[in-house]
Length: 143
Image 1 (tube, rainbow, N blue to C red):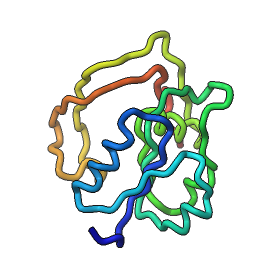
Image 2 (cartoon, rainbow, N blue to C red; image 1 turned 180 degrees about the vertical axis):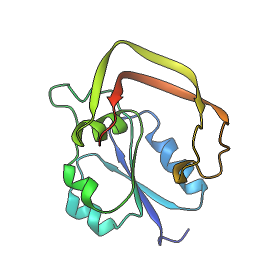
Image 3 (cartoon, rainbow, N blue to C red; image 1 turned 60 degrees about the vertical axis):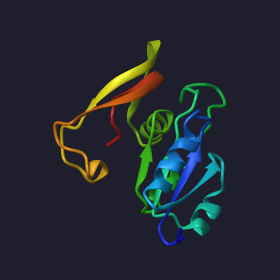
Image 4 (cartoon, rainbow, N blue to C red; image 1 turned 120 degrees about the vertical axis):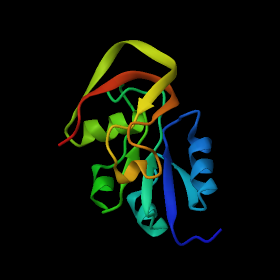
């Protein structure tokens, strides 16, 4: 596998971080997993074409919750947040994350309602079974 296009997966403690990186590699794109607190300088040296923020067990409101530098979002590289990663990105970029009254675990259904680059290859209106595991939710997306 060539190392031209590369994806960086930042690990926030998800049980599925290895699976995420493997799925990227199955698409013939090189990926590496680094801890969430890797330096911005090291991320720049790696020169990823995209960054994935994994999920994790924390809440963005927990004392000592893992964070990334907000400068990460100014690198000009697409960033995909999954679960905690999405909540953290929303929180850092000015959106609103709400604590849920209960944690949710188990299968869920994802419906593709718009054709976007992120969903390339998936049919608009398509429904897909996914796994959810979260306690918080994004109430208002970041601007």
